[in-house]
Length: 455
Image 1 (cartoon, helix red, strand yellow):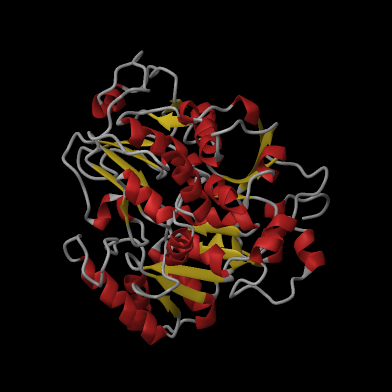
Image 2: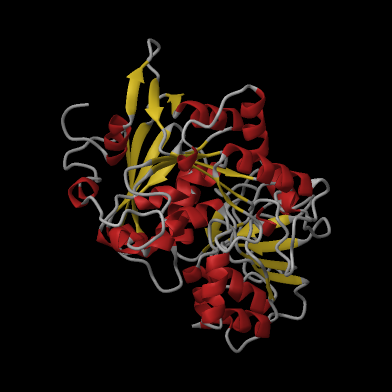
């Protein structure tokens, strides 16, 4: 491309190997990340076909999706047959010669948490994983997106993938966020306003003063939810905050290529296929009410009219005020909101308080073993335990039902996860997604609650 270019276009053009006759592109892939739900099948399929991993140093695998997060865990899982996923991924990864972060490894954790914290993802790189929330890593200025297992095989065997260039969209957040309003609320506000399909076919760049003011972990939360917007990926231009955050991380270069990294931003005058502008100061703490992330409202608002099936599933009629709705389970974790800053914000609200006696379960699951150790060094684990929360090992846990943990049908959960689909956390479970602050406030109240009232 010539003329002013967007950030996505710059990374795309730098990785363009060739153009096919049909107009599709062959894009060079810098990093591939696997997890135990799909890793073994991809690696075993390649081995059976006699195809080696082209460059094992560029491929990583981790145990995160179905590992047990209870203290003292091993290979055993609560999901029937889950242990085989772990043992087979371990065997296949070792045979392929790729880097594996195993169940008890000090660096184990959720893919999209450990990749940034280890410096595996870097500005300007392309990174793929068979997981739809790979877009999380776009927060560091990388082009990162989710793929299927067969595509993972292709990327590992050839170093390239065939795909069509996405359209570009810029979502600009002006102004500044109010207290107790976070990146999670920004994402839910975007979804509520523009729909769960609003980003379809686009790579979305998040920009504006409210985005620049976010810390790195909050930027990851915002990009994480790009897939809920149906976008190919989310991305934020790297800046000095990004470069400082990456300094000293294991897989990051000892000396950054300043001029190249500093050019990773959309040029003045670059044209986007679509532009959205949102005033960040207008955003309140948000929470979902239905069966899609787009079914989200301010925590102090009333449930709007939506699809009959959504109302029936969650047991909430239009016109009902969401605040005060009793909950059974509170969960803080997942690749969306399980980093140290997330835990700090939740702990600040629950410190010196106790969760409501009506709560059947309250869990905090750190996003990585490193996050867990850092939180314990600050005493956050004790704050949560004193408040009545369980403190767990790292992993995906209650983000989805494949981990094997669940509750009785009809149970109502408030969760820092990214999806409130029917059955996402188990058969008949009603899930409300929100920020760590809103989840913490609700656990204390025993019902959906506004974190601003605890200030």
